[in-house]
Length: 166
Image 1 (cartoon, rainbow, N blue to C red):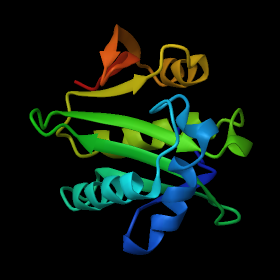
Image 2: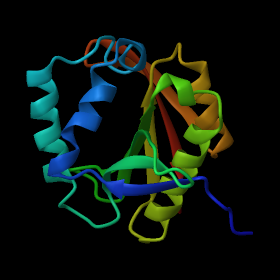
Image 3: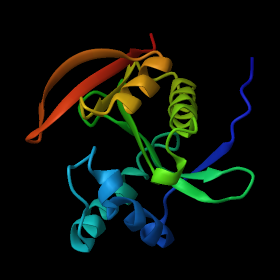
């Protein structure tokens, strides 16, 4: 059964920094990701790395999430290859708060996993969340992820969930 998505994705490009910065400078969005909003200089450095990562493989990288009907920018989604284990990738997303609770995160995760799975190169996909973020945990569980472990990640509490593809 083919799913009709309400979203489109396209990779971030040089011209999209302001949209990215709107997300990562938002305290509410970043509270469950880094614990704080990013300042411009840090955001610019991360964006440079994001753009470099987008060159590695056509199917993997960081994507703008756009509402199909309106073209409105909803947020960010990623499916990034692990630098050491090319059979593994990490997924994640950020949405503006006005789009929370509307099923977009579930669609983003499903679409990115499908896109990555079609490459045939992955054994598994991981996701890292704040253990307090029950909404994101539920999104991942709905998409077939299972909790692997809870631990500190870069000094913050984290939960690693994974989905086996092979």
